[in-house]
Amino acid sequence: MLFTDLPPELVEQVFLNCDPSDVGVLAQCCSYFRSVIYAPDDPPASMPFWRALYLTQPLDDPRASLTQLGLPQPINDDLWRTRLQRLIRAQSLAPILESMLDMISYVVPLPSRCLHTHFGLTRKDHDPARRVRSRAYVYDLRNYRPETEYGPFLPDGGVDWVLMRNLHHVMSMHFAFPELPDDDAVALYPMCLPYTQLMMPEGEKENQDWAGVTGAWKVAFCYCDHRDLIQYNLSGAGDDNSLDETMFEDPGFVEPDVHHPERPTIFFEATNGDMTGIVLQGSVSVTPDDGIRWQFVSGDPPHPIWSCEGVQVGGVRSRFGILGVWTTIFHDEEGPIGPFWLRRNTDTTSTEEDRYVFVTDN
Image 1 (tube, helix red, strand yellow):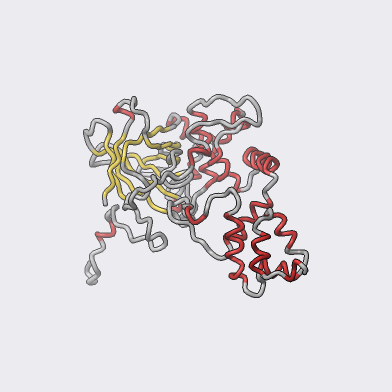
Image 2 (cartoon, rainbow, N blue to C red):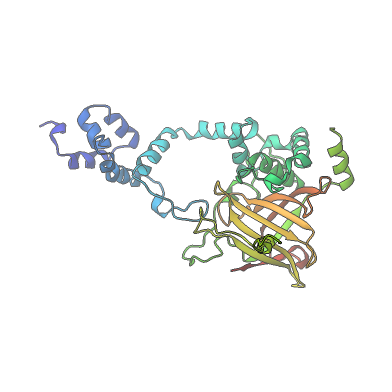
């Protein structure tokens, strides 16, 4: 009796005891094996086999995974096969990590900027010339325009990772994190990869505060002397029976987000630690490319002066926090500007002056 004479169910059980890379080789042996593995005439019929093969590996079950927005990951017929095939191609892990580190340190294209912002500082980031370039980009007022909401965004509303990367570098170096001893070392600090994971408490009941706004936070700002900033930026060269529209002039007016119905916009107010009054008012929403946008104004009520536009780096509620741009609400052509970093306050020894208590407005 030949092995190919066995019924497909028994052949599948044998294949499930093989390494996934060997299963790919077996599919090339004969048309019968290929039909068992891929079911080319009816691809969805192969999903139970690929799901079982995936779950025999030391990998997390995608059905229990969450997206960066904290929502259940969509599962389709091709997920099990495509993800497992992708992991098989990445079995040689060391060269891949080396390539990623090279890309973070040297490559210019946009995806590397996003990866670099999540990864954190590399040894090359301590090069004084690189810090100069980052500062030159951050304090160039031409990078902040009405169509980008004067923040780290693209005209279509997506995240501008080129600006985010430079904001990250300026803010990271401001805290004087120690230089890495060699090229293979990784700086572990609150603005690096381990802190970008989403933080959804297990068993927590879903509520309108999906971004975890409620609680105590701390914020840090960077800025250069206003005179230096200006010098740097100058160195380069009814009666018609119409309806009342005043309601649309209210800053709090917003249309529902039809693209993210499970992640509605959150409005919040924040007070300083001694609760003397409201000092921050803002909102958290989702960008068209699934980024998490924070925007708020601050100042002595009821006349805010400062405006902040930022992006949550990593997943929803990540400990990394929010990185962005501060300026005035007037957005003057020669107004002050700089990066800021907002993160949840976990230090019980912090003074009241550097803490803010956020309360959502549902």
